[in-house]
Length: 49
Image 1: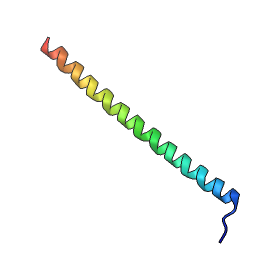
Image 2 (image 1 turned 45 degrees about the horizontal axis):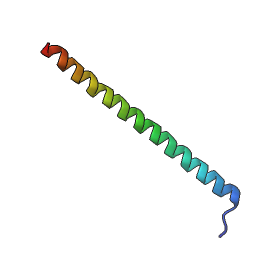
Image 3 (image 1 turned 90 degrees about the vertical axis):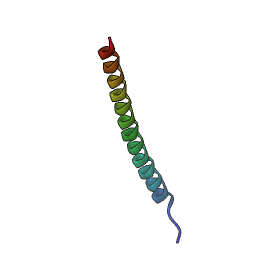
Image 4 (image 1 turned 135 degrees about the vertical axis):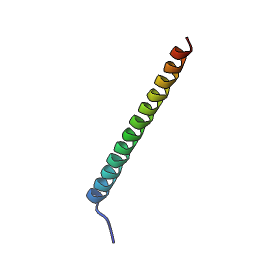
């Protein structure tokens, strides 16, 4: 069973799109978590003063 070049291109593009969306969503979640941690740390420092 031979797969046509067009089908291969479609599969590759869809996989890359899904991977890109997943990567972007994960990085956004990671960045927001890091910002939350930084805010917590800065709040603790303010309380000590």
